[in-house]
Image 1: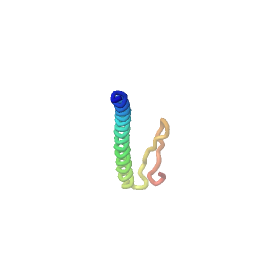
Image 2 (image 1 turned 180 degrees about the vertical axis):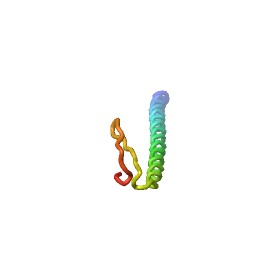
Image 3 (image 1 turned 90 degrees about the vertical axis):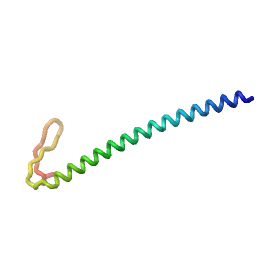
Image 4 (image 1 turned 135 degrees about the vertical axis):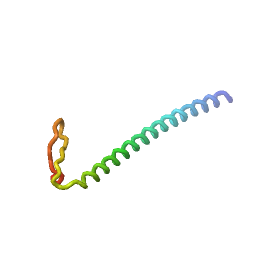
Amino acid sequence: MAAPIDLELKKAFAELQSKMIDTQQKAKLTDLQIDQLTRMKKHANLTHAEIKTLPDNTRMYEGVGRIKRRRTWSAL
């Protein structure tokens, strides 16, 4: 009688272990995505801070598809 219980326990343990590994991989992926988005946000904030220091009549270029459209800072 001990053998069937041991097999069931081993099977349940293997399933839990598989779920744990899957969850850990998803957590790592989520952490990487959070890090990437944090870097993007920091870059955007630094860029915005630099652009805010420019005079209003500064020529700037905005990417629209394959072309660049010239605008002034005040028009943005």
